[in-house]
Image 1 (cartoon, rainbow, N blue to C red):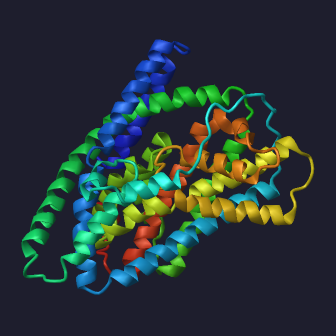
Image 2 (image 1 turned 45 degrees about the horizontal axis):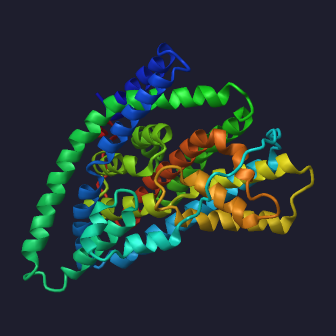
Length: 409
């Protein structure tokens, strides 16, 4: 059975459980929430080991074959371009379609949210490099350590051959173990979907956020069904771009309902290798970098959310310069969300409101009830970007072995 089909069946069972279980029962919701947390912890369990050892070999091979700079340029260019495209799509959609206002609520801010850039830098450079392997949220720290080992080991291939051989074996071992974990994670989707559906029922029953949800859904269909396939068709000259979308179904499904970019990383790497044929040296570098920096989906929903907040507070038109400020600020913040694998989109919206000021400092509270759905869409956009983007990098570096669609997992 295809992996995406297993996840889909488990998801449907999770939705059914949400309707079967007694609604409004705090004990039941607490139990489901606990099970969901355990499932997410289980899903993330092998992320750092697989990424770390695979990245060491990837950086080593890329530098040894003099493809490191080319891979970095293509990866960086696709990340920036995708974030620009998604932010622009979000801005255009909310400017063209005027959604109904959100009722103003009176609620106090319990705590101030920030990007915590200083903390991210501390995590990137702890007192010991080994500590980077303990951080399961900010993947850049362990990825940077892996890059140092991988590139430095090319200085003397003979002397450091035992190191690369050991890392190569560990990479393959960790990957094989992670395959087992991703298979069992499909069962955990029952709990994730059950918890998500309980939250979704609470959000959708008021009808306040339904127009925004429909807009985000339409934007998502346009991006993954039209924009990205067209880019694949003309940039990669791929006659069948929708097969990339097919290979991404499992990752997108998991990303949407979990809202966790780190949870989906192993699925991305597995489908990149076994379905799309992306070589390990690209799989081990591009996917982590996209997971950390390619958060254009968060920028898209942040832009839509902030303009909705503006229109809820004021009937005046937004000045053109303010529109440009919203666009570029949301775009810039998206690159600083690497430490927020869960809830990054709402953090971005909170920071944008704070930076804008002028009485909008607490405007994000209008969308707080819908935060889980907002973050679900943002994560789905970001994971789709990672799959399509990594494919572009693999094609442009010629590090891909194309598989027939019947061989997709």
